[in-house]
Length: 266
Image (tube, rainbow, N blue to C red; front, side, top):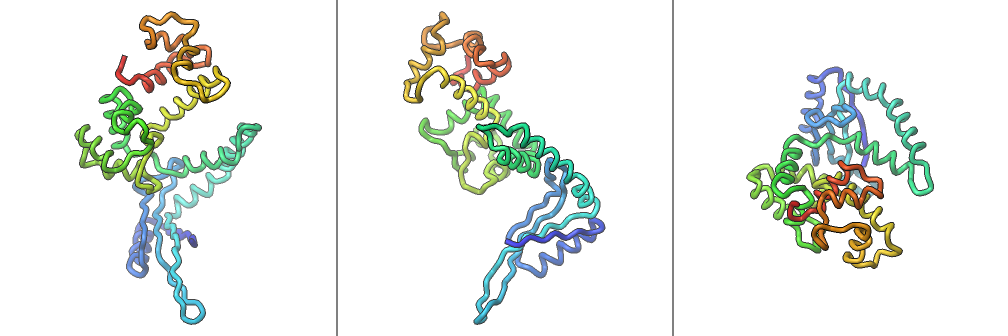
C-alpha cells in the first residue's frame, strides 16, 4: 500500500482533481471525510486506486495506492495542530507510564479515537430507542443474542431494527457499528461505555475471591454477606448501592451498573 497526499488551493480544484482520478484510475474505495470529519476537525477525501506495475518478463502486479485529497486551508490547520497533538499524546504516555499499563498503546488508542469520525446522529437515536425498549442496551443485547453467544449478525440486527420500527436504517447503522467489516458485531460496538463499566465492576468483585472458578451463588453471597436482603437471592437498587460502595462506586456509577445487570427492570 502506497500513500500520497495532494493539496489543492480550493474546493473547486479539489473536485476537479477527484474527477480526474476517478476518470483515469480504477477506484476500489472512496471515503468522504468532508461529510464525516474526524474528531480533531480534519476534512479530506480519500481514494484507493489500483496501480498496475509491470516487472521483468512482462509480469504485471497490481498495487493499491491511497490518495488523500485535501484543501489548503485544512492542510495548514492540520500542520499547525500536529505539534499540539503530539504534546498531548506525550502527556498521556507519562500519565499511564506504570508497570501495569502500556503508554504507547494508550497513546495509539487516543490517536485512533481522535482520528476517526464521531458516530452519526441516527446511531445515537437507535441506542436511545434500544435502551428505552429494554431498559438498557445490555438488556436489549441479552434479549437478542443467545445466552452463549458473543456476536450479532446483520440478519439478527436487522430484526432488532424492525422491532424498533427503523428497519430501513439497518444498513446505515450496521456500517457504522461494523467498521472493521468483520460481518459481526459485539456488545462493545453497541454500548462501549456499558462494557467498560461492567468490566470494571467485574474486576472489583473478583477481588473478593481467590480464583475465577467460584460459582455465581457463592460470589453473590460474598457480595451481600453483611446485608439483610428484602428478597433473598435478589438485590434491589438501594441494596446494590450499599454493596458496591466499598468498591469506590459513586451512586450514579452504581445506578448505571445496576441497570446493565437488571434483566427485568426493578
